[in-house]
Image 1: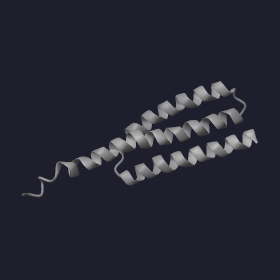
Image 2 (image 1 turned 90 degrees about the vertical axis):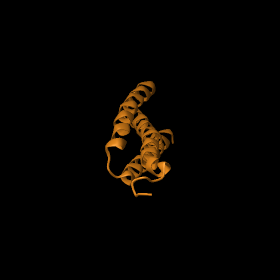
Image 3 (image 1 turned 180 degrees about the vertical axis):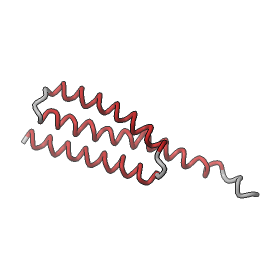
Image 4 (image 1 turned 135 degrees about the vertical axis):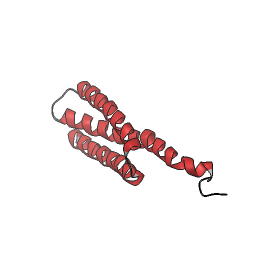
Length: 103
């Protein structure tokens, strides 16, 4: 066996990781964008449903950008860190802002 013929599963893992990052990580990141955007727009005085629609539209556009970025990036560790870490931070900040508005 030569070094070029490896296990097909091992060759597919980088692609599967990129697909998972694009779909799942992109979803988590955009969930944070929408949560923070909704809370922020509402705190700035925008009507709730207007803030909801605007943040959802922005979230969809950002999802498309993030989806493409996951396939263009060279380092998958950085992609996962930005998507999951950034999504968690934005969702947490949106929740804190929402609590301060309600309390």
